[in-house]
Length: 174
Image: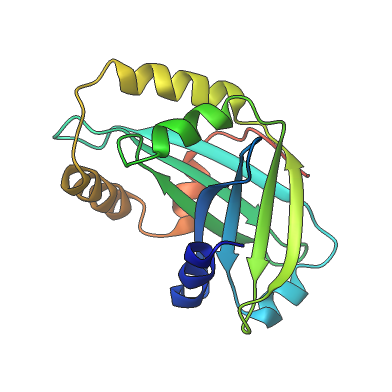
């Protein structure tokens, strides 16, 4: 794990998730989650469900891509990542998501160490092809516009389960 990723995990609060591109010469997009160790242990014998959505919350023309995933055998825990195509390096990450076959989800517990990893087939390839096509037809936006669009989206879906329920199911298991 890179120093940046370690620092990001250390600075995160339980329940926070993010994505990053790792590895050379064949980079992969991975998801990292900071969670309480007790919650990670309680996941049980489960896989990962993955959903995605492209939102245009307006009024400024901004596309917010959300990739959400859910784990847990008895109690489901949802996590969401927010994708800004125009953030530095994200265009490459979007393209990678159209090609990679598997997704890795790494859960880091209270001590900052990886407690559990889930691997699932990548059901999002076609979604990211369409998302890239949509974004390239739009005028570019800046980080402030993206943050405003995310806040508007959060006001429409104030909880992760509400956001999860509005996205079409693209995968189960993993």
